[in-house]
Image (cartoon, rainbow, N blue to C red):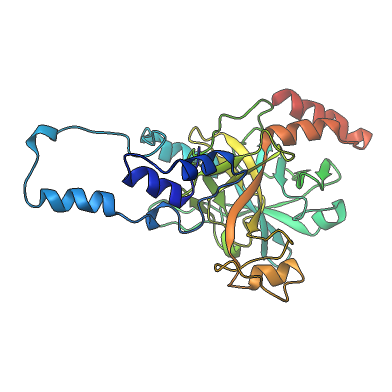
Amino acid sequence: MMFARADLYNLLTSETPDPELSAASLTAPLRVIAPERLFDIPDNALRSVLDEMGSKFDKGLAGLERIMLQHREILDIEFLAEGLLKAQSVGQISTANGKGVGTGFFIAENLIITNNHVLPTEDSARSRSFVLNFERYKVRPPLPLIDLDLDPGTFFATDTELDFTIIAVKSADTQKAAFLPLRSGHEEIFEGQAVSMIQFPGEGPKSIVVHNSALQFLRDNDPYPDFCNYTTDTERGSSGSPVFNTNWDVIALHRRSIPRRNEAGEILDRYGKPIPGLVTPADVDADPRVHWISNEGIRTSSIVRRLSELELKPKFRKIRTALLNAS
């Protein structure tokens, strides 16, 4: 269960929390922790304890330890090494002149996935490529940049509603990257769980978000069960990135950010006031006043289900069957 900041402060600083606040946190359909997040909660409760202690040390509490957040966040150190291995599967979708337009990742040998709005048609894919190893190297030996042509003639499947495209890439005489299979069952995810995202933000080199990044909302019981929301930071170029749980399973395909709106559908600033003149997505994206409240991805189990339902060209169906059998 995720709480609004007011609810959290109420629960942390009172022995008898306000029942109205607590009840509100249970009934609100989407209570997000906005970009201010937990760190803006007033620290009166902690500060008062520290002030009372002064320079004294309570020896009776020495050596006691506790998990401080809702879920245990202690990981094996190999989490870092496994993340580097998984990152080899993630590449940048680029134009012929090398400009990054999105992110994608291998889900099977010679098959990658990204968003439909990144690669909407077979024709659009013919002028794009998939670039591996576009990274900064400070402590590791640099890997060669690998530029793979997309091959929509071998396989192409897309869906506008769930905003995904799966496409073949042409084989290359290089060491093949590992791939990140899509899971057909319910993913091991829950609200409040930490998530990571490997992406190419701002058209720059491969990056990862691990801090202040958690699932805000799962939509199992609402009209949009195919999507999930999280606090992960993204920028232009992040579309099509894999969202991972702490086991490095892909749980979602990132697709967009969500601005705050009023009941009339107007986009709001941080003071809750409508911003006039926002006509196109580019207008919204460029306006620094917009109050962004969440990022959104398509759950991998939903992608697998929809892929099985798509009408595909006969020559693509054998590849689809193999992909579904492996999920």
